[in-house]
Length: 162
Image (tube, rainbow, N blue to C red; front, side):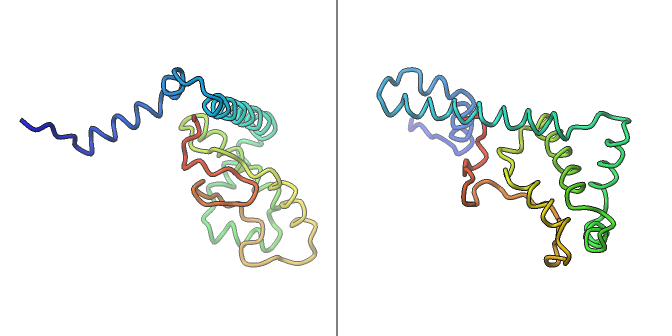
């Protein structure tokens, strides 16, 4: 009888291997493997430190004034959010803070964010100081799937644990 490997089995094997990278690299003692392991550990540490900084600066506890403000901001319909940013009723910094809070909470629950753009807050501050509106999406935070190459950012295809 011929053995058949179905796509479901291949996906399961792939997921199991990805969830246990230490088992894949444990037997490898080459320079290349050691460099890869060191790079992976360094990136994981950088990510943890970055997320801890964002969490300590932007996370708001349930029931606090900031929590209510952030919740109200991220639940605005898209057209209302854009209108409030364009009319300067909302500041880009406040909107970004609210969405950072939401993103860090989602990441804590689902591990869905791999990296935050380091200069995002500085850009939001520039937009708030600008005397003119800088286009139709002025001040709107955006996110990209990390298989899109962005200068200065890692592309990991979503495998943040590797």
